[in-house]
Length: 223
Image (cartoon, rainbow, N blue to C red; front, side):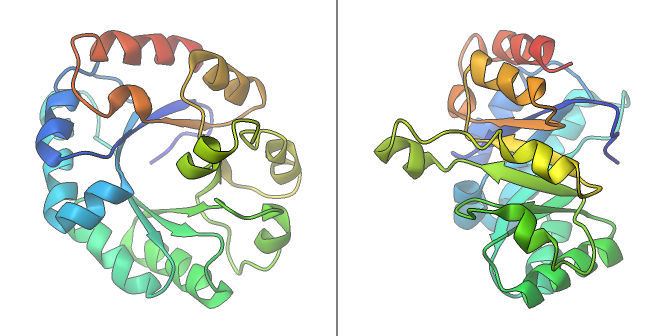
């Protein structure tokens, strides 16, 4: 269960379950770290990939607290089916796209509620998220404001959508996650603009000797 009073670092793992497990083994045991089975990993390794990250994070944290895994399914259709995939992998949360049909988003959120998972709706590619959110039957647990990897690669001036945080915060009762900024400065801006969760991945794509230190540095910024 996510605590609205806390700020979280979500580490997206996108390569292989083996490398993901090695990265996890170097992370500090902090309840403010959420582990994400990234979309490339989920597509390549499915339920087993999610499960291997879950097992690795459970082993790392021991009995200190309950591990938290996000399955970044980016559901566009078949809301209930993809929630069940995340659930079978041991995930605590799944994601759907804000660009999905409204029927799918509503079905996805309801299915997450029925299954005991947190629902996360990713607004990548959505110009005005708050307009779509007005149509939801129920609010998701988390709304993700997201500058995509390809967007940044082809347009270096494309901003991380910090500006959307206050618009959503003032109208809707949901946690807000920011994805698409991986530097310390970008993480600081996300927290300054009142994000609850900051997603990073570039520094955690492959195992490295300084992986644990990097996570500690990000955690110090996210307070």
